[in-house]
Image (cartoon, rainbow over all chains, first blue to last red; front, side, top):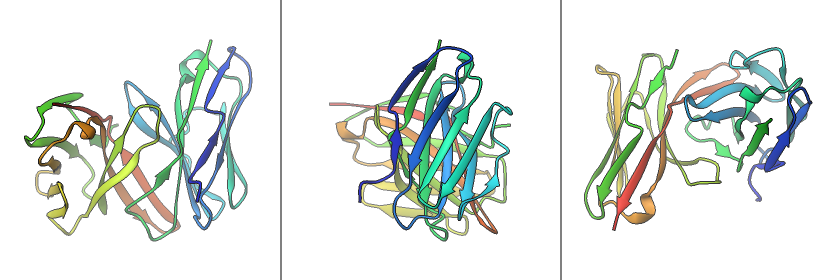
Amino acid sequence: DAGVIQSPRHEVTEMGQEVTLRCKLISGHNSLFWYRQTMMRGLELLIYFNNNVPIDDSGMPEDRFSAKMPNASFSTLKIQPSEPRDSAVYFCASSRTGQATEAFFGQGTRLTVV
Amino acid sequence: DQQVKQNSPSLSVQEGRISILNCDYTNSMFDYFLWYKKYPAEGPTFLISISSIKDKNEDGRFTVFLNKSAKHLSLHIVPSQPGDSAVYFCAATLVRTGGFKTIFGAGTRLFVKA
């Protein structure tokens, strides 16, 4: 299995532009998590899905952020409009329900908003 | 409101000695506690976990201790090896209907000197 695949690995964009981050889950996994890593706050949980349904989006910072799962194996995290303070590394992770002890992370997308 | 706290941003240890990484949490309802390891430019990878009903779990050189009354857990690595140099994240999981939610600390960077 190729693991969780995130794209792009790096994204540089100008303030005000729309940014879309993508994630492909591990086959057979049905839980999907989006995290953001910053120096100050470490890994913050933004949102998680179970069986394509958003369960908890309380970590999404603002209405500028939105996440979707159009199908069981794919998710997007969109920021519109982007701001410099959104610069961070965004990680996607997947797991199987019942395996509450482990999630598998992608390599992350480093976002820089200038 | 940071429910999981790692108060030491970094730790330096000599090869062969014990590394002790500490973590505190505030929510007594967490069901599992986990440690993840992260190398630069990679996503976090699961290392070891412990159920909230246990007080110790061991896996090779890695042992996690849980003190529920103090809301404190620690990861012991013995003997430490240079390849253990990485950022270690403490995490805590709430199991809910419809999935589980894992909250991470800010991380501790471990340096193991040869």
